[in-house]
Length: 189
Image (tube, one colour):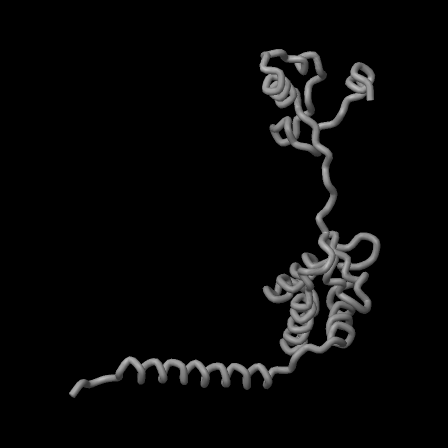
């Protein structure tokens, strides 16, 4: 007779263990107070008023992070990175600073849960903030290479163009390249 478990018995034990573990996790989740839609107004706003806006408010906020502009909503869709930083600073106990009155542990925990609830509501399928698009032009070298590839003759017309601007050591960055007025006059619009 073989000693130990058969493969089927082992598989059933593993699956049963997962089900028991999942049930325990579910019960643990139900035991913790969950953040609600109004948790920002009830928890985050008073916390900010009491511990943050003295330094991070007004015309010249510390670290250029103004937290007084969030009286009723976190505006997560537009200020997600700000709230990630706030959550990180509070979680790591960097804020409020050590020389300021410290909030008690339950207040910090409630604040963290409420902010995390807001962050979790972020909708990735909503309007994308792609930023601005830079109109690119060819630099002198790229222009000469394009003419050479199109015509098949090593003719270098861009050698007469003004020098390209350089940014971070490169002369082909779209934000740095501009169209000098001299080119507009010489070659028309």
